[in-house]
Length: 599
Image 1 (tube, helix red, strand yellow):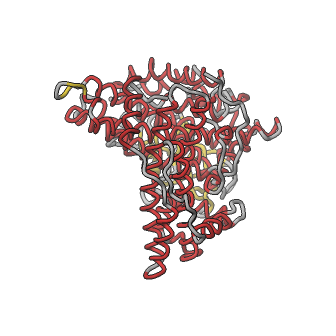
Image 2 (tube, rainbow, N blue to C red):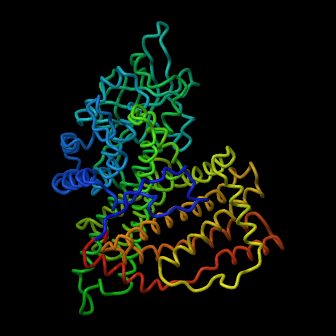
Image 3 (cartoon, rainbow, N blue to C red):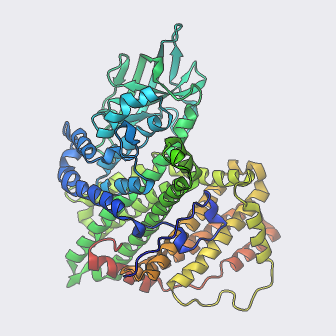
């Protein structure tokens, strides 16, 4: 099999996928991993197989010491140190390697939740904003898992509305200590953590972050929450009653805590999307194994077309999410590679690179979490009655999947973020959106060419046509909505959400298509399956894009104007229908033959 190209990945600007086309060689895919990265993946996968899964029952039962012990074992392998710089006991890995670790340890949602919170939102604030003294004191223990981290932002009255927290901090007259009062809710790892990053308003005004050690007087860890899912992870409230900490435990600048909270959530969203990929890959394997073993009407249910549809739909969505995740990781690393050696090793620069791709991070969070919910649901459906009882893992997958659409910003909030960031970048001149919209409008009003909407040759060609159409529909809808509502668009949440879905579908389909083209060029064994999965995604994208655009148009116009715009929609959406039955069977066959996701 020919080697994959070694052409450098293009460090495209965040959100540019909406208006620019890329060549397959310009994006990173999982097949482009180098030898060291493959070893990282193998180490993480072996840890999941040998350490996490055998302890699944103990984890779910919250047996004392089990979760902490596993995090320490992960630390011994360097897995909890992936994003910590080497001077503080970390591994200082590249973004792709860090992504691989999160992906391959995410075989049990309770563990991946604890792990993800520890290595991500609980550790990165220190890496990015900590003083030298703070880093020296805390990062080495966080790197080894000796000290587990927690992150306290949400409150009973301020979940998504984070800036309106009620927790207060007051500096003592001598400037030596801060006294914190308030309560934090739903703190992951609260029951096992030794260090918390907690947000409060100094004097009720300056939104700030603080480092609080577990045994600080005035800090009380509440009882464990009894949750619908991720039952093996620790979730408690933190009660702060005149909790006094040294003034030196202020993290970052007073009044600048929102920078810490929102920037760390970007990587939190990215990592959550990646964790959903790891979980879905495992759930799909369960689905395929059961379908092969279960007999009905004299044959394996894996031979039934409607079961194959469940397998293929799950695999296709997983393929798209995986392609987006590694593409984004590759872009971040490509941007860092363009910096000089000193800056490339600066965690602040890495933070800026991740912030550049806030749009992609939110898309991955939404797409990945909804993809995992689909896969979990199809797993239950495939197993029938067995999937509905606790004796089998499908029931746990189903319960565990729901939380992913809530934390790290609800999917509703993240949809608003996607559209909001696109519009913000356009207004700042960082994304030439208006020019792209004008080009689409000019094309839409030009005379029809003779071959418009002509039949396509194969799944990849049809997918290319679908991608071009979806991109035009997204730009058309964005243009109509912007013209109708102008600066008041952000108040139209339903329209913002529809636009976000259109934008996300473009990123998902393009990432899948570029990877499929790359696999075909390399004569990869799974090239046909990838082409079929891309074809399924293309059909789904067109259905969603047409529906979403129609809804946006109806919210923006009426009468003759609406009829004219709907006519433009029909023209832009002229793509030949593919044979989804044949594509579904191709994907399902590849999964069944390998008893897992085929890539």
